Length: 583
Image: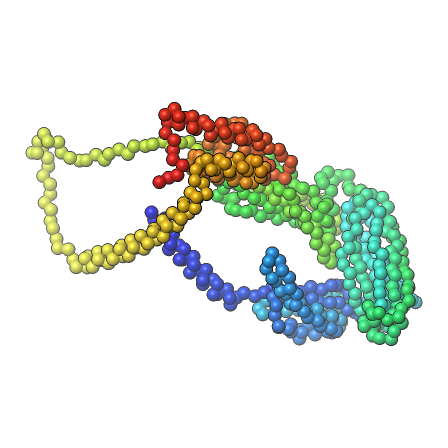
């Protein structure tokens, strides 16, 4: 009764707290501001681009005062982007700032503040000399550069192609890079200004990540550039992609030969050459309050720098008595940054406890080869202990309730034939006058009790009305056990396994008059027949597991029909059939 009376007061308290948080949140909320650069290492005479992005539409302008201390601002552009994601419109504001360093050394792009949001500072390394082509005689030159001359199988190699020009170009056509026995992924393409032999020039830089698939010699063939020279006299950047009169020039990079080594013989695990590997886990609920038959989802993300997601091997599921594991289809994601590829593999495992107790999931370990230190490393998620309570689906709680009789309280009455003279005389009762303050306190207590009784009565009436409405809706959905049984047969005929599972649970709740039956494991415990238990477990496996699983629908229908017939047979012999609904 107290639980029902506190329902309304708890609801009012939650609404009050939410209102306060909403009001205060309006004053502290700020959008997210991020800063990024297309290059963090450059020569003194080269340029780069700073991009500021605020994830809301805003009319503010970043303050450039601190930025001008170490950099010359060559150009600034701003714009607003809009996108629709899942029906929600999102807008962002972006500023692109072309910069040139003023001195050699490590310079710092300061933090920016826009509408309360603050971006991170970014260090920039400025070298003494800018990159120049090996052949300084031509107006247009191309070159190729690899991050290493030798590597292991499946290890990332960064290949950089550069085109230098001191004249205007009206078009650039780059032949796709194709390498035999290797996976090639383009990372980015960027343009920046520099000086070549004292003359203003431009560089077009294209980077690739290459992953050799077998040991031996890896040949990176020459890549063909086809550029259109602009014969006009306009400014270099105005002419860079113009349409003025031009002629065609074909240039090819030099062929590169690299040595690819096999995986070390001492390495016995799945081969994973990377610069960094991380493991992160997430649980869908608290692991300290699990119940038998109630599933929980564990999500493990494997993140590897210098690898693609396709190179990350799947995790092995543990074998723990008392727990059933269902592995979902893994999700993969590839991202790119200045160092190359970052691959992520997301494993989702549904865990269903089948009995109460404490269960320990062993360490989750991934062995990998550190390509920087040239040693084998191990990344580990520590062991996890799950505390599983008996809950409504526990076998111990599935036994039918046992009726208990409450004994009548014994009275301390005196038998009629007792000798009254043998009873000790009672002490005389002394009465005193009740003070006035006690009457006042009793009156206040009575008024408070009446107030809370009135609040309790109104809350209970509202709760009863909601329960009656809900019960009325449930009664309309399942007016009888026969209607629920028809839903089961219809789902079997349609071969819709999730709908079939829901229909079986709905029918079971009516059949046993028990709303706590929320899993097929609990239904199997109530049925107490091993064949039905096996086929219900096959149904769960077919729904939650990504492995191929078959379900004998005819056998399931027959077993459930036998269970249904068994109850009505007992009723026919004289036992009372419990009502489908409580009154």
